[in-house]
Amino acid sequence: MSAKMPALTKHASADRFRLLVDAVQDYGIFMLDPDGIVESWNSGAQRMKQYRPEEIIGRHFSLFYPPEAVAAKWPSEELRRAALDGRFEDEGWRLRKDGTRFWASVVITALRDENGTLTGFGKVTRDLTERRLHEEAVRESEQRFRLLIEGVRDYAIFMLSPEGIIQSWNSGAQLIKGFSAEDVMGRYFGMLYRPEDLATGLPATQLETALAVGRAEGEGWRVRRDGSVFWANVVISPVYDASRQLRGFAKVTRDMTERRRLHELESSGKRMSEFLAMLAHELRNPLAPIRNAVTILQLEPSPSPMVRSSRDMIDRQLSHMTRLVDDLLDVGRLTTGKIRFRAEQVSYAQVVSRSVEAVRPLMDARRHQLSIDMSDNGLWVQGDATRLAQVLQNLLTNAAKYTPEGGLIELKVWQDGTQLHTSVRDNGAGLSPAAIHQIFELFSQGDAQTSARESGLGIGLTLARSLVEMHGGVLSADSPGCGLGSTFSFFLPHAGTSGSGTDDTPGVPPGPLFLIVDDNRDAANSMAEILRLMNCQVTVAYDGPTALASARMALPQVIVLDIGMPDMNGYELLAALRAMPGGDGMTAAALTGYGTAEDKSRATAAGFDAHLTKPLDFAALQVFLRSVGVLA
Image (cartoon, rainbow, N blue to C red; front, top):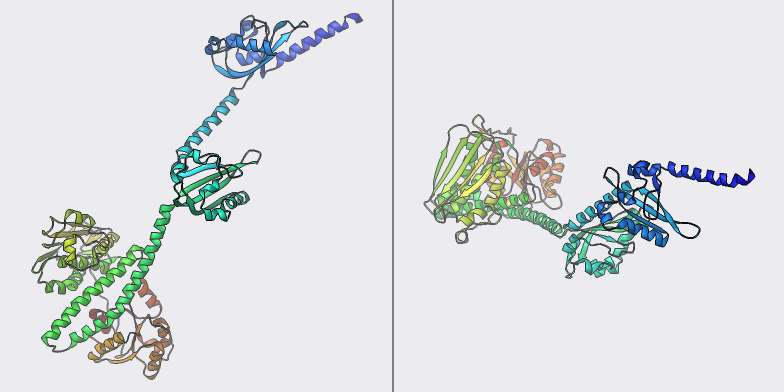
């Protein structure tokens, strides 16, 4: 009995091994004879390939291979290699019973007896379809990402090794920097920097910063292949693998040269606008005494014909210069977006009246005939009355400048629904088709031959168009051609016939004693002379301390203060005057070359009762004098 025990144990061990193999579900394990005929079949093979043992045992294992593999005699090649090397391992597509494919990892082991004779093969198969699909998805994703990066042309995107060696190069990098991939691959990325940046170690510093804080970003000059430089925005980010090992750096560069140029132009434009504002202010100062001198001449009871002619000529030219200065200042505000307007219900008849009155001297001097076609209804529109008058005045002045003596200018106003239309037509110089397209551009003066005969800065029509557009309207020009006249038309929304303008008049503070304070002696003296001609008592001071001393001797009822005085400006002087006994009862007017709504608001907040803009127009002076009771 004891002699048979080893045989029974060996048999039992083989049974247990067979049961173990059969129970494996994740691997297909089966035996082949030397010719490739299936001799055994475990449950894992059935689960994977869908064949039951009785369906597959006794059949050739090439049944599991796709037709193209069978045609290439690959199953026989696998057995040959396994027999030759003892073992063969491969991955490839295999077939299930239902004809579907799966990706299989295959290991074939040659089986030999004690004499080394080949007795068959052991074949182990594992279904790796999910892994294969995942790997393919990853590869496709990486390929799409590579194609995406390669297709980006606005950004230079490339990889660096941990040492800063260039490892990839997209088309955007070649377009921006001019280097081909062959030029840069395997070279240190410092080649893209200027020599002075290399001397300071900037490339290495950027990599260190990226490692330290996770990102390095900056702007600076970079070098192209041809030696030229461009302004670049650069972002460098470290790249880590799954184990947090540094794999290198991703570098993204964008050419910002154009944006930098536009920023510089914007800064230059801002400085230019500030210069224009200062220039306009400084030009207004000498215009103030000239305007006052003209006013004195206008008050002269019986001037000689020569004096009258000279006075009127100076008045016309001064009005023209004042308008140019005002336009210059407004263009400065326009280019910086600081021009403002107050929308309110406006009587358009008053706008037309103010504009025509302002241009009438120029038209009269040229003996122009002005025709006005306007409804008698109370036309009104939502807008800024001053800005609308500025638009219409510019159009009328433009017509008067380019219409010969004795010419005809037609002003027409009509309403169409909620739109108010205005046109100014003349029979003057006209415009060529090319000039029509550029007439509204800043500093454009239309046709060269025509503009050469007329003075101007070429800013009035630009300003007019911008002001119309700020009101939500459109200004356009039309002309049959040179020498055939032109028509400028615009429309404004939000029009009606039920509104009316108002003319509020402030109360009348008592007292005729004036104190004029201006460091421009001509301006102060000429204004004092005008007031004296109107039977006012006037004291003049040219600085703040002198004005305070004068006020202590005789407290004025009305003070006119220049804002921009040295040492003690108008705001400081007003505060000191208000602090004097009885100072709260004085009427104070600010006199300045700045006339924006913000300037007026600041003057009001500082305690001024009125705001007068240099050069002071006689009509504005009359309004102010009526407010203080000097004029009825």
